[in-house]
Length: 255
Ligand code: FE
Image 1 (tube, rainbow, N blue to C red):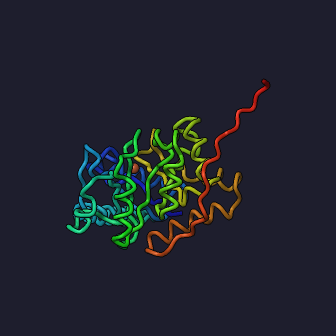
Image 2 (cartoon, rainbow, N blue to C red):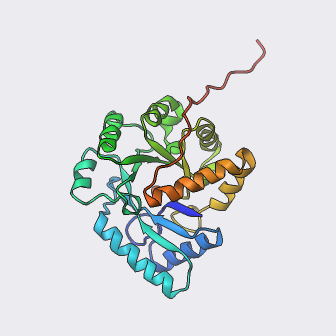
Image 3 (cartoon, protein in one colour):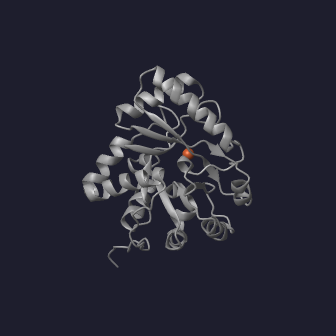
């Protein structure tokens, strides 16, 4: 399995704090059947700034340590950038890192409770640079939960999305689990990833989420997510089904 979203690099955000933490996470990942992790530290989220060069150096240091420890896991460079007005300028200036450096896919994080006015325009501009923006964990954005048509509109215009394994397994509560399911059913998401920060409260849960997807939707759906993860690290095109609007649940009652 490939995990596209993980805070395994230590000492630079709210993920792993020490090399020991990174190694604990690495062992847990291997235990769940993960062989490749894209390290995606926070960038420009109001608290952390992690630019490309620094991330690339830390990834090679961690890979060296994994070799020494005989942990069969490969770390690839990535970044989880908050949406901000200068993202394209910074991409051109070499501060923004695409997933595995392919200049094809870029992670974009929305604030947790809103979708800024400029989102659609900026995601369009990102695409005009030849990049595909992937919105991370849309299922945890309270505005999108209220108004899923906003996400439908973005996906319809070529934006991709990644849902979190532990959202599907219920770690973030029933509402977020249900919205994750809605997004899968409406073809509004294209991949799962862990967004793991540690091995306690924000663990991987990729195995459990995979079992859930296989049992609810069948192996075809699970393999589509896996193949998209592989396509992304190789800079290839992903599989995308035609998006639908999330159906409003009809109120079933006796009048
Ligand atoms: Fe994250």
